[in-house]
Image (spheres, one colour):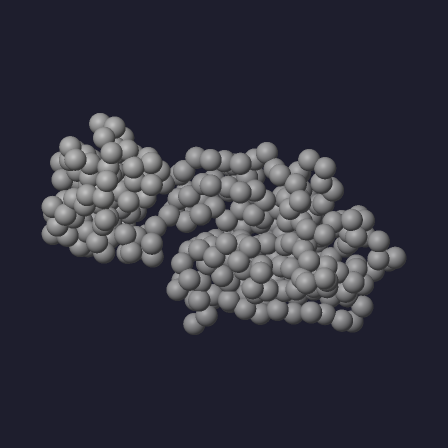
Length: 310
């Protein structure tokens, strides 16, 4: 729980186990959390998807940022090169010999790069395509084998990796609950709900059809109205996510709200999904009505189901 945050809890009732779990709040957005992993789990991914002892590629590596250089490639009068982004950072002084850089282009190196064909940097993750040097960067921005960002919403986690790596990371580092089954039954409990405007409950991951789905539940302001929102994200690419559908339902006293949709890929951040309102949205007054009693405590039961489209 974030320092100064309220103690929000969720009682998760798993239909597959019949056991109850108490899950703490992951984040109150107005506060910082101390759990901020900074490591990257993309182990085995070469920097450029190629051997670093290749002399041509070493020539194309910027000595300042160590990234591959793309036109315009600059050089000093002594022939030392660097990329255009770093030229501004070094205040027009060569970082190797300290000569003034001027505006000399290394056209020969740019021409050499143009003739190269190179593998994707995510070759070790499964991409075996070869690209012209100047097409490589554009491909990598959308490569389906590129690492995924950690889907945990309770902190600004910088860990990336493939899906099996992230599943282990979520379980071991973020201590999220992992459940088998395609139906679920959650009860979210919070005393004094009027005191918390922006909060994120602990993520829950479901193993269903051999894939993983992340269930999110948040409190935030939609315009001037306080609301709760539940939504599902799929641990995989968008084209795979479209093979599945899910439904969410909340209600009491003979009334209910339902939502049916397609889970969003974790390529889309949880904030992007939330801000697009792509999920079950419950106004706070209605959530407290569903909770019963004097409406001073949140006791909201959310049920759901995941199925595969034929």
